[in-house]
Amino acid sequence: MRKLKLIWDFRGPASLKTAEHHLIHLKEYKELNNLDIDITGIETINDMHSYAYLVVDEPEMKPIRDALKPHRGQVYSES
Image (cartoon, rainbow, N blue to C red; front, side, top):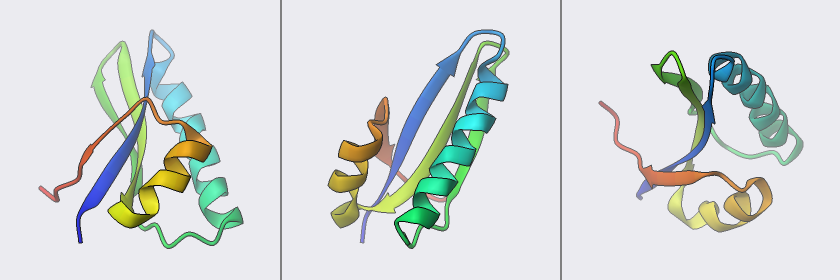
């Protein structure tokens, strides 16, 4: 089954702190809705761009996307 990485981008000098804070809310949503999501996190592109993400199975993506409105998504592959 294909997995999709839903991504919320944050830019500016506080992007890392904002992504860290947003990840807290993503984890709260996961717990409140009893979602079986194991892969979440943050990544830093550079000093001015970080993002928070969660990885979902493709069939579960639409309701999560509609509720949380990620900025973008991509096919997830473990590297």
